[in-house]
Length: 109
Image 1 (spheres, rainbow, N blue to C red):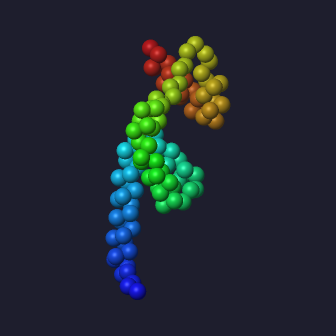
Image 2 (cartoon, rainbow, N blue to C red; image 1 turned 45 degrees about the horizontal axis):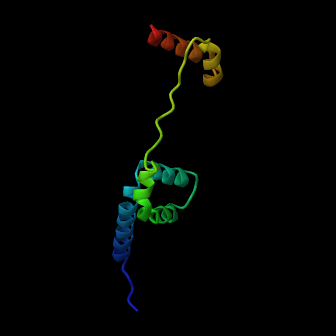
Image 3 (tube, rainbow, N blue to C red; image 1 turned 90 degrees about the vertical axis):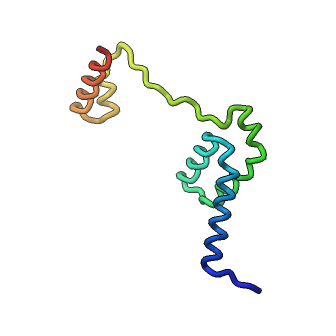
């Protein structure tokens, strides 16, 4: 039985990561975002990479159905409302809320 040296193991791990990256890349930004979300939530990185790499044969279908694209970012639309109470509730301090309201007033004018 042959034993792999530490350097050979590192090269093997590096080659595997390169392969996984090549498999995952064609899936697009949305699957990559979902992968990052799972890892951030505590999933094992290597297991998650392996699982997502198995989706590569479906890359064309995922793209065709729009699953490769991230949805547009949510936008905050502020119209005629009292912003200071809302900003205070979000920011937690009257000074920050007043500053936020002043900035909005500048943007509106």
